[in-house]
Length: 238
Image (cartoon, rainbow, N blue to C red; front, side, top):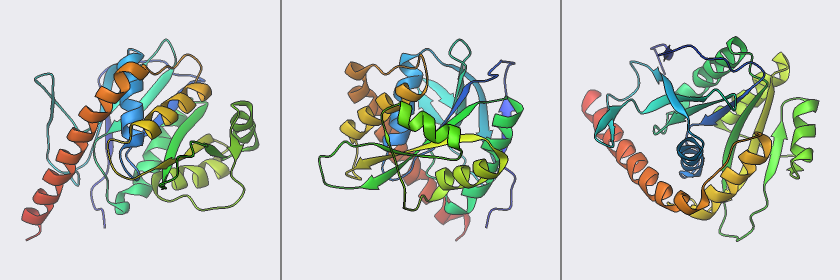
């Protein structure tokens, strides 16, 4: 079980009132992390904070020669969009705490809509996207974006907790359900997810031409982070 508190450290002030928050923690495969990484790179987001805990593996992600925390917060104040971006595949013991932290931060920032996603492993070529909303207004947004609303099913992990807690606090949460082959880099599902997020978040965009390169880069970093995390856990608890 997790014993250390997960915290947010912000580097600067910003205004996201009535804006959007994207959950970029990886689920099955790497598509969620890759799609948010592409959006960050193509829509000129700025690093504004980190998410950290004593329980997180002590790892620095080196990008363009610079050290980075593996879980970060990016902001585009013009679009009023925040992204919780992470290369960490968190143990499920952290999922409730991360979802609660995300909802508390969204309330503090007066966020209108939280967008998350969950992958379903499938070998089918179907690119049909579905959505689940925490409130009636969120479900209307799903339909307005041309997506089908899921009537029956289960949503695990951070996305599931966001839906549950959002439904009782009246926080709009939309979870996009997408298909993935479960092996990376799943370029097609990353593109589909990024484009669907763009339908829900006005002004957000994805540079498809650069997405494949970002997919390969992000997948390599995520895989390496997961492998290093596993080695560190083995040595810490041996």
